[in-house]
Image (cartoon, rainbow, N blue to C red; front, side, top):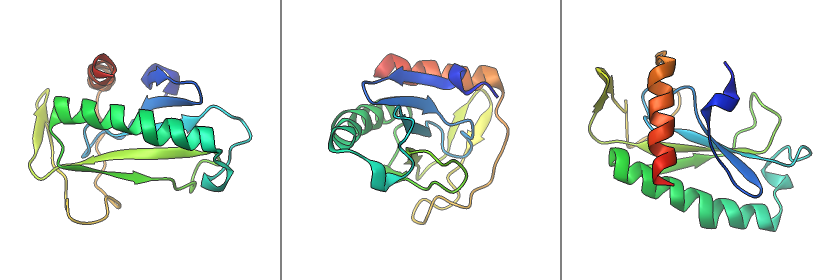
Amino acid sequence: MDYEQLKIKTYSLWDLFLHKHQFPYIGRCYASAKREDARSVRDMKKDERDELFDIIIPEWDTAIKVLFAHARANFASLGNTWNHLSWHLIPRYRQSRVLFGIEFIDPDPSRNYSPYPKKDIPLETLLYIKEAIKSKL
């Protein structure tokens, strides 16, 4: 997968990407720090925190609310598979959403988002979701 094609927006210190695993959390994204030497949440600098929490997350949250009417959001910085500072932005839903015939169902909106069922989403659908989010930022 060419992750650059899923880039939604470039900020001063972060890049915002659509997560390739949209199912079951339509609108799921991640913010990746631009700094090469940023490896974990402990490496976050104040200006990176400010941009992420004061600009990126509120913009993303508003866009997802307008587009898909999520109930709330989860945020996680894990570092389990990628040794780079990044934050997952996961919308949570109490009712299912349907897009291009795909029903997105949050398996348990009152609990941890992971583990979750995975389903491959066609690239065309991913690009549509990406452009829809981009249009609202």
